[in-house]
Image (cartoon, rainbow, N blue to C red; front, side):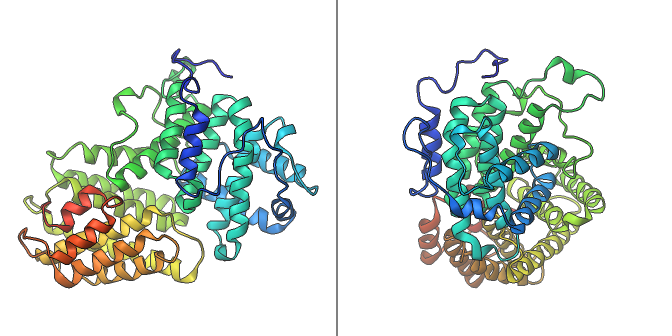
Length: 444
């Protein structure tokens, strides 16, 4: 076990970390659970072994590698390549036993990576059973990671499981898994710089890479859910960077800007808007291959601006509202095309982003800031498509449909009984700031 740099008490003492992780996984699906490394013999996952002998596994792996490089670069590509080849070689037989593997974390990361890669690929809906098997295979090995691996390996596995849960709710509760990963990361001091990291032009360490990936996840998940950030920015004392050669080198800046938006309600929203716009234009030109991700990030940033700032009272509001209308439309068109063509499943967080976009458009239309609400109708259609995979999208669709049909008016008013009924059905999943916008209690 790696030495803890901050001398904190081992988080596995007292309340079992394994129990907390098991609970987070069971939030997704009671049928999936961690295996106790000292109890039953691991099951024989023939489907996983067979899959690793096919070219499809390489395709899924490449899809995963491409995704994390551009979104959550928690592990070095060379290290991930090595793990993939190692696991593929070992699984070339009829079965594989994580119990005798000197690196059980490789089984976890690669199994979860392949499951996520399948979901990111064309025809993902034909391989749901295989995704189930891969996730369960990773959980069989997770117990050995907690028992034998060092902190970095455990954090890598927790990040991989959190990322998988974004696309596959049976992998567990994203919110709770993120909390466990962040707890382990901070407990072993990954948020604190080592002396070598303070040197000019020093390359980020593996620990820094893992930490800043969690920073990205914390920002995106907490912002989408309107929940407090797990990480207090003032507690961070490690260089704010990711490797300059990575596709995701600009993501920390983007996440920091999102966090600043939440804490700067009194600042000029036009300045925040200009910063968001500049970052989008810069990143879109540099990372053209990830156009939809760039537009999504910009749309999410504009949603945060609407949730935490009052734009209409400021000079330049028309320019801001016109940009919001245009970017929201572009994002929904690209997302709808992706859903219709079935080139890969979107993350579950997109359900709430689409609801937020539809809500903002309805409010802007009611207030006379835009001339049509076609984007809101498109959001309803997208929520219908998403509901085939994510059940909570159905309630959000009905809510947005009622908002579009009834409207909220230019001034706050008593919501209809139907609207209140629909809100009550989804209240546990409805972000608080979005609810205020739906009810017209948050000015734009």
